Length: 213
Image 1 (cartoon, rainbow, N blue to C red):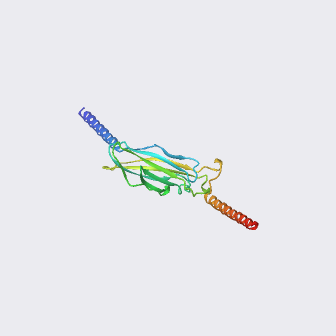
Image 2: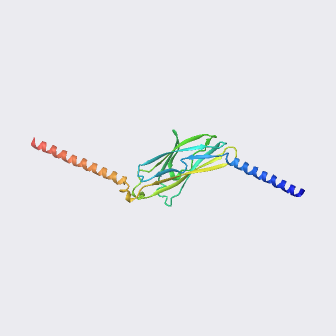
Image 3: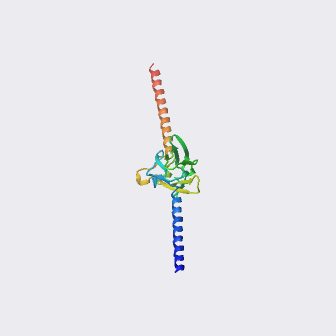
């Protein structure tokens, strides 16, 4: 009888200890909490053409009990990186420029700090370079932006992500991408022809006036 009571007592104590350990673990996991809005997709741009740009705003929140430092990184998801490697990215915090360069070369910005219940907004702009020609028609660039947070006083960390998709349309969207180099040459040629014709006409008029005189 005593043995059964002792066994039951040990079992109850063990259950209480296990429950407390799990509860403590859950509380520890809930101390750091980073939230990124919009929650899933930041960019979904169709039929983008040279010279176009797409601005977006993202909100980063600290919903946890501890302050954290965070930064971002980007990774491509497309099978083809042709368009992805050419797109440009700008990241701004108000009037402060955090990054300006190629999307494919974005490795994040200096660590940013958020206290508990604090949030901030960052402005992202993806640009389609004007010089890109018809060989970039019908391509897409898919990527994921990761936000990695690390607690200031512990080893806790958390990661959130948003996706982006940029596509340049296809042949069924009505036309091809403008070849800016060819257009510029055509404009220069037309201008030269107009100047030449105008000069000839002017000389003829002047010659006729002198002949009549």
